[in-house]
Image 1 (cartoon, one colour):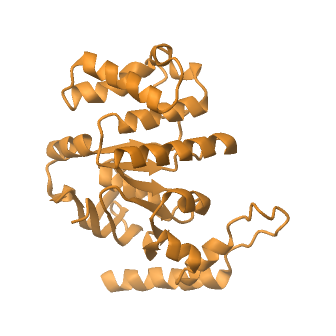
Image 2 (tube, helix red, strand yellow; image 1 turned 45 degrees about the vertical axis):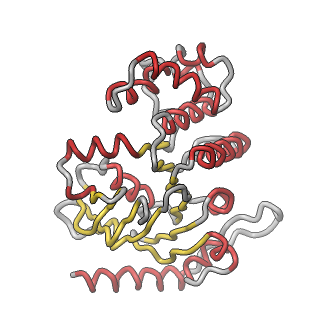
Amino acid sequence: MSFLEITDLSARIRGSDHRLLRGVSLTVEAGQVRGLVGESGAGKSMIGKAILGILPRAVEITGGSIILNGTDLLTLPAPERRRLIGASTALIPQDPLTALNPSRRIGPQITDRLVDILGWTRANADARSKELLDEVQIADPTRVLRAYPHELSGGMRQRILIASAFAAEPKLIIADEPTTALDVTVQKQILKLIAAMQARHGTALLFVTHDLGVVAKVCQQISVLYGGLVVEDTTTDAYFSGPTHAYSRALLAATPKYTDPEASLLPIPEAVIAAVQADVDAHDRRVQ
């Protein structure tokens, strides 16, 4: 059985007909990396937030299931769901400049979850935090653990967020565009680090990104979304060999060619957008 199995997950703005997720189904096997790709607003981050139970109050789930290690999260009372998620999942958030609490030192921001949720002793949690900073290649971890976020670079802060995500050896990590706020050189380092950590720990990874180059480097499976609808679900190798859906092909064609910087950028054709929007509209009619 898959470690994470999402079936027909739907969500909308509360009290309206504005749909955000349209019958999303996907699986993540233990130790597997699945990419969620699509344009901004496609629903990628919404899926991650639905898994973690951190959807905005204005959003409600209207159907489907999220089965994590055999348990449907949507059937659990909120306290039990939080305990299960806290013990088995973690998040690498999008922006390292805002994800850390600016008024607290780095150390407690890593260790509090280990102590408060998982019941570790403070001494064991402190020792684990130093090991993790070594693992993410941060020099002088003792000094860094006593530092405040504003005293560190963006790349160091992102490494700390990665260390924090892996701290309790979760079975699933959701990486929500973790390189977006970083410059290109640091992005490459962080991607390499996430891939190495994932392989070393054997953690399942749901990687949310709009960057197909990232998918090619770190993912084995890929789900392409448009308007909250999965339009293609395939292996990464198959996708880059030749996607089957017209929107997937157009999305791939629109990717800048770094080997040919003089090449013109190709927008997604209006006819393709119209066709995939027709798919979205047809889905909505079926579920009404």
